[in-house]
Every structure is written in C-alpha cells, then in structure tokens.
Image (cartoon, rainbow, N blue to C red):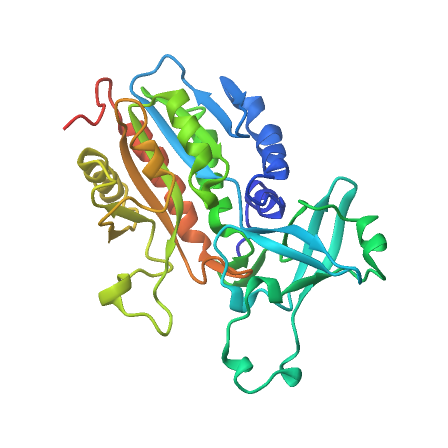
Length: 352
C-alpha cells in the first residue's frame, strides 16, 4: 500500500472552507515559504511563491486552497443551527453528516439533520430537501447554550479524513482542490534544484475559487504572467450512470487530463502533450467548449491576456464528502508540471 506524502496529507487535513482558508495557508507558510526565492501574502488570502525571479518567461501555476463548506445563518430558540452553503453542494447528501464548525474559540462538533424518513409523507420522501429544511445539531439545550459556543457567520466543513481504499486509490474530503494546490507546490519544490529551468515559476495557492475564481483574478493581475496553468480536478467518468457522449470518457489511472478548447492556448496544449509523450507520462484529453470552471478562466483574461492551460486530476464523486482519486494520477501531474516548466525557453510566451 503506497504512503501518501506528508505535504499532501497536511493539506487534506487543513479545514479551509472558501473565504476561511487559514489552515491551508498555514501549511503552505510552513512548507513553501522557507524554500521560495520570494513569498507573498495578499488581501485575498492567496499565497504566492516565486522561483528563479529573473527568469523568462513567467509561468504561473495555480491550485486553489479553498473547499466547500457551510456557514451558520440562524440559531433557533431550541439551539439548532440553520445554515447556507459555501460553494456548490448536492442538497440531497448534506443530512446525516458529521461536521466541524470553525469558531473563534476552536472547533465545535455537530451533525447535520433533517426530518427522519419515518416521519415523512410518501410524496415528501421523493423530494430533495430545501436548505431551510436542514439544520445542524451541536447538542445545545437552547439558543443561549448554542450562542455560547457558535456565532452567526461561523463556517463549517464535513468531518471526513484521508484514507487509502485499495492500492493507489484514495478517498478524502476536499481533494477538490487540495490535490491541485499540492501539485503546483510540489512541482515548485522539485524545480528548486533544477539545472534546466530558464523560466520564472510562480506557484499560487488561490482562494475563493468555489465561489467564482476570485483569488485567481487578483493573483493573475498582480503577477502578470506570460503563461499560466490551473491545476484542478476533473470528472472521472469510469463509474456507472455516465454517458461519454455527454461527459467524455475519462478514467482514474489514465493520467492527468489536458484540456483543449477556447480557454486553453494552442501553444500550451501542444507543449503539454509533447512533454507528456517525451517523458512517457500517461495523459487524457478533454474538450472544453467554453470558459472552464477553474482558475484558468480568470488567468486567461488578466492584463493583456495570458497563455493558459488546464490540467485536471481525474476524480469521482466531485463535491461530496468522499471524493476518490488515484494517487498515481496526482504524481504524474506533478511530473508533467516539472517537465513543462523545464521545457520553456526564453521568449516562449504563448503568442499565436
């Protein structure tokens, strides 16, 4: 059974709902800041590390450090907490989950609840509950008790950890997108001692991607890179109830997914494929007919335009408490990023 790198498991253990990325920031501060040629924090909460700052061209690698979450919105007289969602949730799977509320005074454990199936009318059993029909139970005896431990606006995440299922197949909360953040910073670590690096590499842990690629917008405007790669997760469709005519044919263990379409610069796509084939790194291609739901949509439009690309790690059950990936795909994504960065020569800026 493979052992996951400590850097990866530390990122996965970090509870960092969108807009509250403190714990993931701390992991990057401890792991990356000591080895970076320059390291910056900004008002959006992004973390930016530079390598070879006089190099040319400038390559931005982005992986977002925020994850899905909940936010406390109302506390009733009996001490039950009502909430809204941070990011895109499937409301049908929220109830019955153990969660952690991140308060100023430390973590508070809770369980998401709704009316039991035995107490529903037959027609109600077929419905997806609305958000106001769900709540959080922290075992409070009344409103005052709840307010002594939790405040309006406190965020929460599912209380689910990392685990190997079998071989290199693993499950965790928030592989989306802690694996992307790991990839861009692990590539940064491996490039630190490279003798073949001509480019400046700027790895960024971006914030608030789940609510509109907000951190990437300001990061890309600040960095003004020539080239940019967003590393995120993509839908592994190698499971029941998917139609490749609608959702592409992409599998765990098939290697990183290289996007191709308007959000992806032609130079970037061709070079990623060339590097993958030269280094015998398995890869898959996904057609992207419009701006992707990744940081690349923001990076591409920054300044005078950035030659952008999207690399995705195949993942099953996206935006659920138990996402699944193949760790070999993650390792091959890191290798592809390293190979791509080392392939760049001065003046290769993606103009086409």
